[in-house]
Amino acid sequence: MTVSKRVMIVMVIAILTLIVLFSAIDGWNYVTENEFCEICHEIEFEKYNTPGDSMDFAHNENGISCSQCHEAAGTAGMLEFKKEIAIMLIYDVAGVDAPPGEDEVVVLENKFRCLKCHSDFISLTSQRVINPHDDAGDCNSCHKGHERELPEQTCGECHTKAIESLNFNGGKHAKKSCSFCHPQHGYIPKCQDCHGLFHIAGLEECTQCHTNAHSPRNLEFSSNISKEECTSCHFSIIRTTFETQPTKHVGIGCVICHPKHDQSLECTLCHTGHNETMKAEECTQCHLQAHVPSQVDYPPNTPSSLCGGCHEENARHLKENITGHSNKNCAYCHPRHGQIPECTACHGSHHGMSSGCTTCHMEAHNLGFPHSRKSVI
Image (cartoon, rainbow, N blue to C red; front, side, top):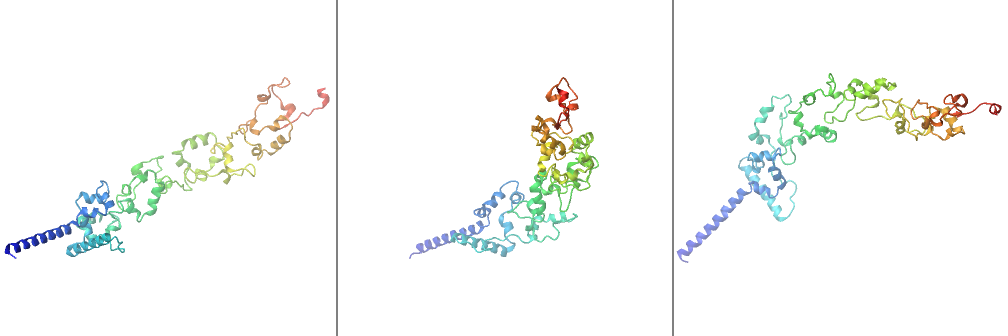
């Protein structure tokens, strides 16, 4: 073999060696690039590239790569990171599921690794009454970058009932972040900071009615709440209805019938029905307004048996009577409780008389004509 051929072979081998070497180096570096991670972790990268995400996008804006958080410090950390990636690739290429734990790249478990960038948080929160970072050994216990955003889901790790209340009956509060009302851990704001004195002046203890700030629409009243406090919203009922048309209900606290806001108890819990078969929902067929129960307007189809619960004798007479009145419901003549119509409203003048019908016909429910036959011959 000539010298020139030997030189040529050596040069080819050297070039191939360099190509393999540079390819290996390039591949060695590529596995730490974000583009390599994105091949599998599409969901995480969607968050990473989406403005507004509280954790992932914040790292993107500051140029933090995946390996800066997932690769431990030092040469040993780098080699461990490369080894774990190689293991994942082997299982993936072979199409075999990796045993639990062997396909996961290390996640930061040491708060001091986070503090390389976030060292200011320890000093910023150390002066607070309750320091959320006091004795915090694992940053990931609250700040989980991929699985959830801050702050609601993080707060919910401990404050599960508060989050459930907000989601179920939080009203406009559900649209606010936890930090809107609680800028620091343990801080409880005053309702007036946002709402002012929404109700009557002097009623400053909002929690007397709104017992749970996380479900403000679920009002459970304390037993000692006064009518004046209800008046701030329900002025017409308290000041107009009760004062102009007083009944025994005036002497009863609102909370007796309304233990919760928008809740009205059934009448039959306090009042017995007018007959044994009467149901609670039938009360409002006549007593149209519970705040003025004595104002009773009867619909035409009200059965006379309901009236007979109180007016037993009149109902019996009407039923036994053989006149035209016997086939009429009580409400036909008495559309409102206590209203007694004039006979002439139906019958007109009779016998040349426009009044004094009961002189002869005695009682409307038991029509009679007690006179001797001779008096009409």
